[in-house]
Length: 276
Picture 1 (cartoon, rainbow, N blue to C red):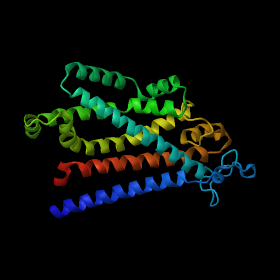
Picture 2 (cartoon, one colour):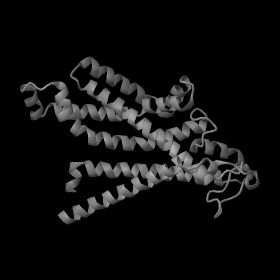
Picture 3 (cartoon, rainbow, N blue to C red):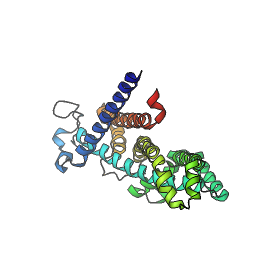
Picture 4 (cartoon, helix red, strand yellow):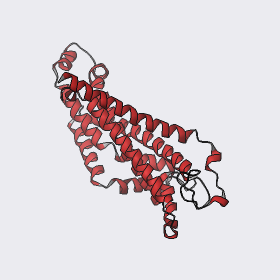
């Protein structure tokens, strides 16, 4: 049984490493992609997928494979930034709710219920439009809608940890709240925050793509996946299926890899899973 558990955890580690490596390679290729690869050539406009152009070309003769890689890197950058901001907001909200103040707990609970009662896409649209669209509005909208579940998790964990004997003993020994936070609370919260950020990452990517697709996210000149898919709708009736299908499939694959990475990390960092 112990050997079987070890093999299962080894498989999870390998699967997580493969997912992380694929995501890192896709991000690196998109970030360091030369500008010449994104330039158009009207003589090659509208070409279907081939060995020369794996995803074909668009109506301006731009290689869709390289545009898709660049768009995925942009989506990943937005997802990473939004996940980090969401995790920071979740930690502050969860700690405030579990601080012992009934007013703070009620206020955070009311705000959490309010945000979760509105569909995320609608709320991201409203925030992005109110901030003038663009990258700042998109980041603010995604970060403002993805902290609620993690904040509730942080609140529950902090309340559970505050009831532990070693935390009560530290208080009796005169340790400050900051010392208890750093030495007792954060070490227990960091693994769950890491998993929460990774699981938030694919949701942020999908919301970035959907908002950009609707025209309220990144500017049209930015090679983002949502913009590529939005542009492809104009040419579907002309038989150009590849600008919509292949970048969309790449986006779905990226989201599945990120979600699988988060699931593997969740099982690896969960102490109970070591005995499964």
